[in-house]
Amino acid sequence: MRCIFVAMNYSSIPAAQTLVQYCKLYGVKNIVISPGSRNAPLTIGFSEDPYFSCYSIVDERCAGFFALGIAQQLQEPVVVTCTSGSALLNYYAAVAEAFYSQIPIIIVSADRPVYKIDVGDGQTIRQDDVFHRHIGYSTHLKQDVVHATDRVVRYAPEWLQTASADTVQNQVQSFNEKELQHAFEMAVNSKLPTHVNIPFEEPLYDKISVPSVAPIEKPKSQMAAKLTIANAEHAAIWNSSAKKLVLVGVNYPDTVNQQFLDVLAQDPSVIVLTETTSNLHNPNFFPSIDSLIAPIEKLTDAGEWFERLRPNMLLTFGGLIVSKKIKAFLREFKPDHHWHVDALRAFDTFFCLSHHFKSTPNQFLEGLLVRTKPLQSNYFTSWDRIRKGYEARREAYSKSIPFSDMKAFYKTFEHIPKGYQLQLANSSTVRYAQLFDLDASLKVYCNRGTSGIDGSTSTAIGASLYSKVPTVLITGDLSFFYDSNALWNNYMRNDFRIILFNNQGGGIFRILPGKENSPNFERFFETKHDMDAIHLCRMYGVEYNSVDNENGLENVFAHFYKQSKRPKLLEINTPRLLNNKILLDYFDFISSVFINR
Image 1: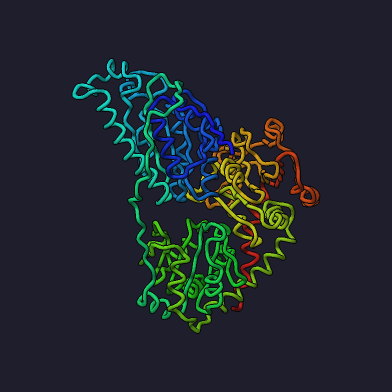
Image 2: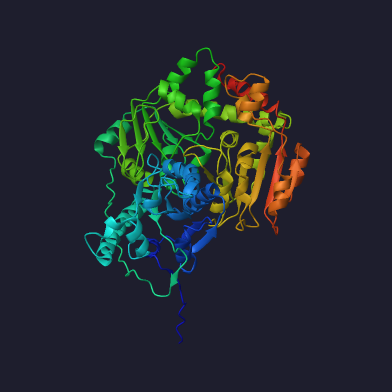
């Protein structure tokens, strides 16, 4: 049997070799590279090693979200690396999203030597700790002194005054390894973004065939998770609460045991409110929160109704909540107890957090439910009658309205094939998705950490690469055009689909309070425009379809998801001045379910 050896090249710079070794130690295989010269040592190390899957994304903002999409799917760290200067700053939106969504991306920025910062040298900024308010850990590695030693002697002679270059290099290597260990441990165990800034002196492109850095052994993890679970005291509180509300935000698909969910669903003292992004389903769950809350707001005796809904016990898990209405309700009508379950952290979203259980939902529910028993209560049954009432009226309303955003979303969700991955953009898109019951087989994702419109397309394309099923992205016009460089890559799968809702501006601003019909509103808030996506699709090789009526939409959906040789985009043009009226009228229409109750 013959052994085949693959000849490899390494960067001649020790810090670059060390970073690559740490990626292999911690199983980080996916590397997103934006072009540049200063990061050439890293590009050489990653691209010449078959262990890594490397992706070239020119626009750093897109690259950050592309990496975030991969990490979202794999739930493991992904490296994104760039050259020096302002390139690094373009990662910030993705870093903030990763920080609040607990997605581990590792930003590796190449830097100029410290003695060339703030002296008028080109393409230099203060790169160390630039993400300090939104990062799990940030480190600035020390510059190697055995590389380009002549320049070290010329520009920073104090580094070598007390010891030889080899002795100082050993100290540099020891420091860098400890810092890299901490950065990688944070990314792996805390699911937070980390930043590694590495100064490189020229020459940058030199290669060697044998690494100069000795193999590094993976150190023992320093971050052991300490779990907390429910005890008998907690079970007693649960058992004595006649009105228990379970609220679930962003949650990865297939992560919560359905058996536990079904037990909650059968308890007459429990109401489970889920969002589209929760990926949780049961016939007894309430998946359209705003359809429950918004009609109550319109009642003259709204306070009495909200008091009936106010829970004694609020249990939350998952990430951030989309519905502003449920947040406003729970902040005003506070529960007696609020428990949040998350292995890492808890946000006091409703300003009444009483206990943070540091465990997974499965660990918590398994420990709690064996100690609890269903409590006789009319909490679920009384509100379930209302839920069924507004669901029936929602169906009737959706069928009766003219072509609009709401009608088009209603039809769009009907036609998504079972089992697809659904990526949602923010703003109007995710909010419309909250109004409808999506098929339980869909796997739903959305960048809700910062809830920005930037990066949705880039995230979806990155995520699709590691999805076992096809992906469809639903997005709005501002979000899509803002991130149009996301299409500038060679990695879009042929089964990738984009559904673009174009209402010629930021339609959500027509729904928000304070809207006024004026030129300034259209220009600075709604940002009215006349753009379409046809030319972008031609440039990037995406098959394009456009509709502006219900029949056209039905006709396109007849073939939109069929196998193709190119990715496809469907642009749905809706009436800018009608959409907000139809949505607001919806809540008036369904509010009649509260009459005579």
